Amino acid sequence: MTQELKILMVDDHPMIIEGYQNTLIASKKVHQEIVIDIAHDCDRANELIKNAANTEHYDVLFFDISLPSSKDGLITSGEDLAKIARTYLPDAKIIILTMFNESFRILNIINEINPEGLLIKSDLTSSELAEAFQHILLDPPYYSSTVSNFLKTTVSHDLYLDNINRKILHLLSQGVKTKSLRDYIDLSMSAIEKRKKHLKDLFLIEDGKDETLLSEARKKGFL
Image (cartoon, rainbow, N blue to C red; front, side, top):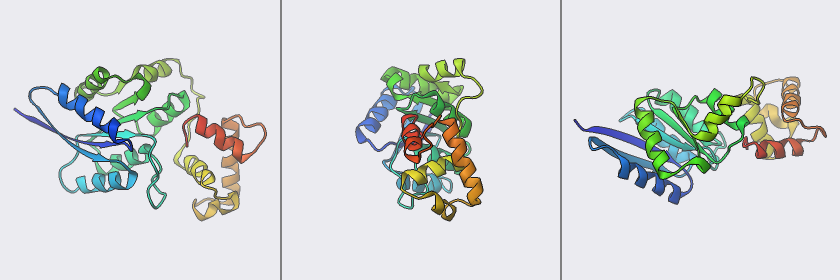
């Protein structure tokens, strides 16, 4: 019996998506039929996810983490899209692909999304992508070697950021001043200041400057 697999791939680099497509099509099982939709930005991906909730659901979703923000600035990454997909397509399997190999970022993705697959691009070969895809269909999760190694050695105090802290970082990186954060976040100024202090403690910021905080956040893949 034919197994039709409907897939959405989201990456802003067309050549990368072409490589993923070719690998999956070349390595599919005899009984599998693969149909792939493509999105190169957050707005198109968001549209396809929400449309799919009312029509044919996707079986597997591939999200690159680093994507240009949506036009309204509310969706800033593949991680945000994955959260939307969890709401609209709860049965779909989510595969996150990222260049970030910092343990901080990896743990954040697992805590926030718990994806069926988490693949670091520097680990990835065509054969591993093909293996990961088939494994995720039958027995998720599948983590590439860098992820598995981090999980084996991680400790409980590794850095984890919730949605609000991530939003504070994003807004600061867009030039929003601290005094204006209340326009975007439903918290008191004192609660926002406490969160900023906590962020600086987490990122070991000694000079107390927002610029240093943002620089460290970028290095660790949170921006």
